Length: 221
Image (cartoon, rainbow, N blue to C red):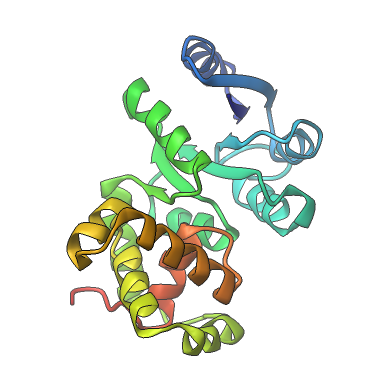
């Protein structure tokens, strides 16, 4: 079972998400929060595999709540999936910088949301196509603010690992990378795991950020 938590200040939204989760095999609802502070407590007390996080909430917003969860080493297994009606560039960038593992708009069909929860629970990054386009544009105009320690970590990567990180940065899944580089899915998965370890990254979403900020992937090329 994939344990899921909900953090949203709108009762109607929470009710809709609850209905989807409760009626989906393999998903278990473990708690709800109405603001960012409650979201952090939910993560600490209930340890969901995936926490659906709204951005605009009272007391503490979803970005700051995500940052607090990601910064807590005891919550390393809790992954945050941002689910919001807002898709402005600054929210996308801030959410990924804070450590969110995915970013979806609230108008996605229920089956797409369920798929996203499962993808994020498995450690993959998940970005809606429209969000990916905005993110690439954001990196194209934003000055680099990369953690230099993480950038230096790129020197630790082998040639094949750098190839794979480029493809991760372009948004390809493990299966797509395997097809592009003509290697097995298991090989790609192993390389991605090693890259995460070498760069000290939490998940694929952070690899995407590092790929662009380090210049390994350049928007438009």
